[in-house]
Amino acid sequence: MDLPKVVAELVKTQNSFDSVAYAKCFTETAVVFDEGKTHNGRKEIENWIEKANKKYHATMKPLEYSEIEHTL
Image (cartoon, rainbow, N blue to C red; front, side, top):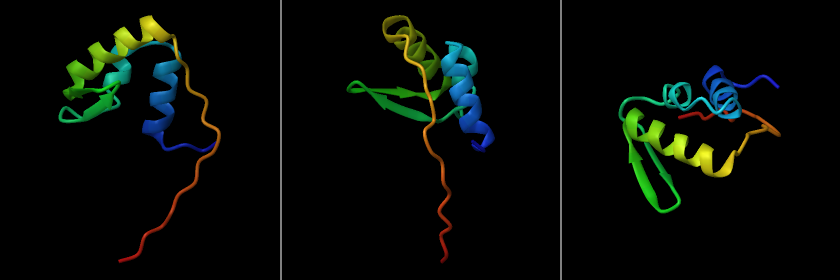
């Protein structure tokens, strides 16, 4: 499957449980909302995914990808 580079990297880092590399897939000002909590910026995202990885050991497997072209 031909995924955008950042999505492919996110999947790869999640599946290797690399919280540092996972967080680098996000911008410094990114916000993730999960399990009722908000995680702001790379450091909080890194801490969140590290704890989630230890608790759940979840992996990702993309099933489908498509792009939608928007015209203005």
